[in-house]
Image (tube, rainbow, N blue to C red; front, side, top):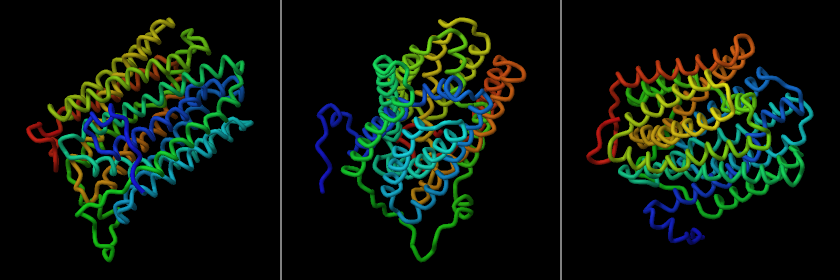
Length: 409
């Protein structure tokens, strides 16, 4: 069965078919996810009566669950040398369970469904990232991951627009909107199942000598392990973006405009991800990551001081640059630092570092918010970002493979 034909504009990007199709999958999946996510804090607080601490627990548990499973799925995809089955299973589980949030009658039900949604994310993410890296030559990795993130964010633009339209037509019936997200979610699974292929590499380990997680960790280069520790420190201050939406509402952004605020954020993410990835192929990864983390710190400091709705709009636009400069570039750096036979495990470790910090970060943020106010909570996030940036700036990183002529890191 051959892959479906691609539009000419996508062919001109010069990226492998797998990368282009996985971008389309992420576009559909994020359209489904982002029909729900911007409205979830409002659903919890206004419909179910939950508060900031409950939101912190739900988002922290959800993201930490996903990241722990990303380590296991990455490791197993290295051992079995079969990425696609994990990717299909993960997307299918998420898109069958996520819409059921519309049937929840309490925040504990939302917690369960977000948990299952993130189990799906945990199953698919590391094998998918490894598949993108294996499908792409080293000189184009930044471009490939930048394109994938841009497509992902394009879906995150479409999703809130659909939600905003549905809010108008359905008169704020949030439960129905959540259920309708099933449609683009199943479209994502269909594209994935029809077109994406596993890539066979020469580095497949002998099956008679099973790879152990502990052994994989010891074989990973020092620079990669150091980077994941630095990333963990950064993530301790990187709480759920749901808190930003809650802050925007408090600053005076109306419920009807919350999805549009989310659209504006993702437009910046989408437009900056591909250029940042291409730039990292030419100039190196480390400087762009440092710039992105610095923008994160400035944005959180801005939210701590903000007192008007217009400030929320400006800060969300600046915040989008942080994602554009870091998301794809961090993944390209992981691909550069990781040996080919351990690439799935390396991406699993990367995502574990993010998730291990997600639960304490969100719980800490919610706790500080409720007891000391939101300016203190945003100040804590900015401080962690500055500390991690200083550590990364002073740390050498040596790539196993990187774009020809580009600096290490």
